[in-house]
Each structure stands twice: as structure tokens, then as C-alpha cells.
Length: 136
Image (cartoon, rainbow, N blue to C red):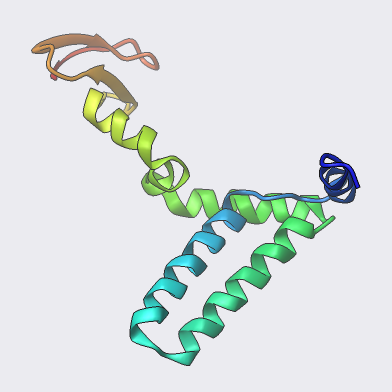
């Protein structure tokens, strides 16, 4: 068997299936954390929960019901809310917090991103065009 042959077969097998999405990745990550905690705590139920999460993520990855899995993933991402960037890409989220400050428009509540360390800035809201000052 050639070195790329198994990769082609895996791609062919996953054709038309869900594949890994945010919820599947999150459940695998939580399962890995539970396995590490179980290594120190030594409780059997923690291992079973980790195994159930792995089975659930494999079910999601192999599912051909794309509509249902997509709705579940969208609900999961909505549920995460402001924590979402930290779950999806912690490195980029940390860089965002380090480099930028987020302010809310006083009239419409739209969030506006301004660079940190630039003093007081006069910002125009992109949604309602109200001008307001922000200390960066």
C-alpha cells in the first residue's frame, strides 16, 4: 500500500459525512482533560464519561445527517457566547485582548474595536454613525 493510499481512502470514506466540527472538537478536548484528571483522581465514572464523550464525537464526525449536526453545532456556538473565541482559538483571542479594547456605542450598543495604548480616541460607530470618545 502506498503512503498516500490510506489518506485517499479516508477522504473517500468521509465524503458526504459531517467531519469534525466545533462541538466534536470540544467534546474530544473535554474527554482528554477528564482522562488526565482521572489519572490523578482515580474514579471509574470519570473514565466512562470521557469514553462517552469520545463515542459522541465519533458519532458526530461520521454522521451523514448534515442538517441536524449543523443545527446542533450552531446552538453550541450560540451557547458559548463571549467565550467562543477562547474555545475556538485561544492564541488569537489572547492576541486580540492584548492588542485591542472593545467599547460599546452609547446610543445603539454596537461593539467597536479600538487599538490599545493610543490615548483618548474619537470613534464613529459603524452602525448608527454616532461619534463618541473612548480611552484606549
